[in-house]
Image (tube, rainbow, N blue to C red; front, side, top):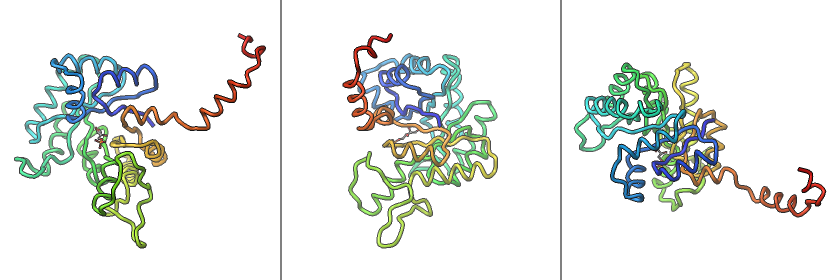
Amino acid sequence: MKIFIDSADLTEIEHAYSQVIVDGITTNPSLLKKALEKRREKDLKQYLRKILLVAKGTPVSLEVTAYTARSMIEEGTKLYQLFNPVAKNVYIKIPINPAFKDADTTHFDGLAAIRELTQRKIPINCTLIFTPEQALLAAKAGAKIVSPFAGRIDDYLRMQQGLKFEKSDYFPATGWIDQGKVWNDNGVVSGIDLVRQCVQVLRQYNLNTEVLAASLRNTRQVREAALVGAHMATMPLEVIQDLLKHPLTYKGMEKFTADLVPEYAELV
Ligand code: E4P
């Protein structure tokens, strides 16, 4: 499974690329807002170019902000023409269904944009996937990647039941059983279950679309995303760092270091 960093913070991105094996970057408008505010960046074009160069050879998803098919196609094409020449690694992120409350758009605008941009040979990462059927339709429209948001499904299930939780708290992949019933969102019992169902549906029909497990907030979710066959997983830098931690690893290092005899230390 490929590991992506879910960030628009250049310092974090540079750190991740220099220290560990990172296979790509996902950004979204909220991550960019956070990074720009923190860094007081003024020149967004230059800033994005720097990110693309750090990630050279690995994909970087840039999300559109428009929400009608026509405007998403226009924005996606412009973003791609402007930024893909920098390092040839841009994916355009299109929401599966941009018809949020009061928006002047339809349920089909996302699919129309994916289809048209795909015909223009622009690779698409379809975002805000919360059901396997959304993933299926995005794949049929031509998306190269679909991004089920695992963590947000877990939050949603807990919030519906009024459960207090921290964002990073683990939620059981097999679902939360309460008085003999499993909490579920129309048959999806957890974020990881959503990822699993997306993988299964796309595999069943040999669709040429990869599943990127998104919105991951802890290491156990990352492990479970790998176990259910996600092709990629995106996560914040802290979660990438946590992937390496275990108390017995620290303890083992202490013991090996303490046991080091001078002859061994002088070997090389
Ligand atoms: C993925 O592409 C999104 O940027 C991201 O994973 C969303 O994560 P969040 O739910 O933690 O905001």
